[in-house]
Image (cartoon, rainbow, N blue to C red; front, side):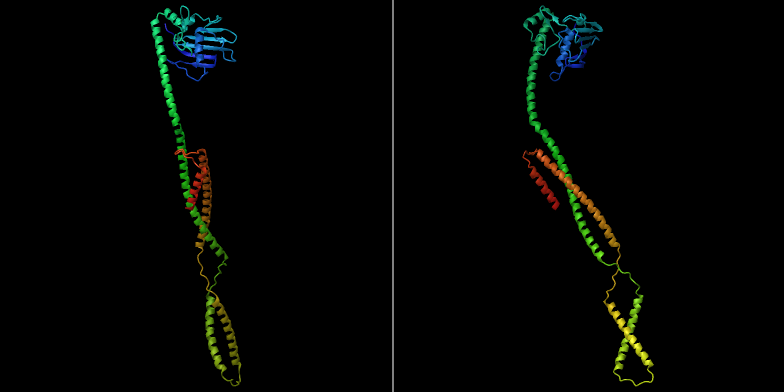
Length: 412
């Protein structure tokens, strides 16, 4: 009659376990973990549950009691517990067994759990549990113990085969361990050789990212250079418009034109009077060469004629002066439409606004370029050697090369 299959193990305040529940799988269950995590405590709990061995050391610190519970595939529940000031006690399928003597256990425990030791003539052999120093029973036991066990067993041949099989498995396991260790060392060397590849990939990705950012900045620099050319051209046009504005500002306002009809009449009368004056002058010259006329009885008409002549001379002189003054006056300028000037003024204001926007973009691009230079310098300082060729990287030379490229692009 074989042992039963354990389906559930529960530990409370047992050694390093505050509360642990383990549900073994069908077949083989392996517990793995770092040192001092409680693997051996699970085996110790099952041994104490099966044999009620010494348990004075299993109570967790600062707790009042500990408990180990096992459930089998046939529905049996076996509980072992121990208090701080009391002895161990069992509870099998709801029945309590306490006041047990040292290493005592209920009689029903062997038939219920079926994990008892095998009684030989002079000793007991535990065929169910293997410890760290003796993983398989009889493999490291004395010859006397093995002989006693086989002598008291009806399946001695099978047990001998089992012992031989266990020994063969131990040898195979040692060979596999040796082969795995060699393979592990080989893989470790390969990993050490391949370790720089991860850094190279990271550096390559960083370089790709920096390259993309530099290309983006290069596009921004090209656009900025185009905008700078446009800004310079607009600045020249702005200065030309300012000069035109200063010149136009010094001019006097355009006079208000008066009707020219009256002036035309004056000019016509002046021409006519010039003709009359010329005739009278000739007549006067002719009369001057003549002798004095005989005394006339009446000179009223002559006086009137002389008076008219003097008046004509005065009028002629006045119109002559007017003619001279009018001859020295330049022709009035021809008025032009101010629509073109207004359009130039509006365009100048618009160009000024665009120039301000371009100046802001230029300052922003300059800040971004300075940040990029700082990032390149920081990367060069953190990576003293080239991840591709292995040569050393001069951070100052790299920054000077970037400055040279920037000045070359600005000159272009």
